[in-house]
Length: 110
Picture 1 (cartoon, rainbow, N blue to C red):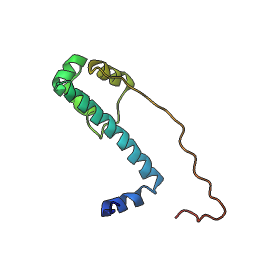
Picture 2: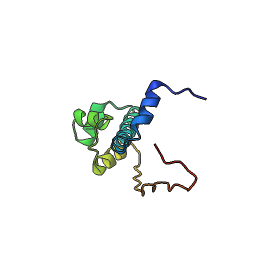
Picture 3: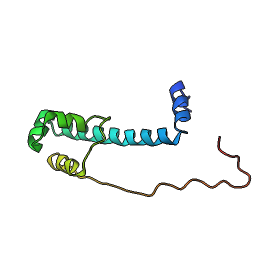
Picture 4: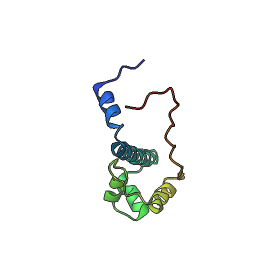
């Protein structure tokens, strides 16, 4: 069993805060998109500048798309990137899970 680091314990505590948890989730989504774009671009053997030229945009825009901190991804731009890189996009919108209802014998969350 993996032993928890101080960071793991800290993150666990922070994730109890609803606002922090939401921001953390959004950052994770941005990180995943950034990594996917960069990986596909590299697999295609393209530099950021070359991809930008094929898309008719700037190298700086590609750099932003590959930045985990960037949250301004538009669906139209992602489609264009996917097309050039021979990929497809899947967007999934789903209902948030409803909070678990406590049974009579369960302790209240702390």
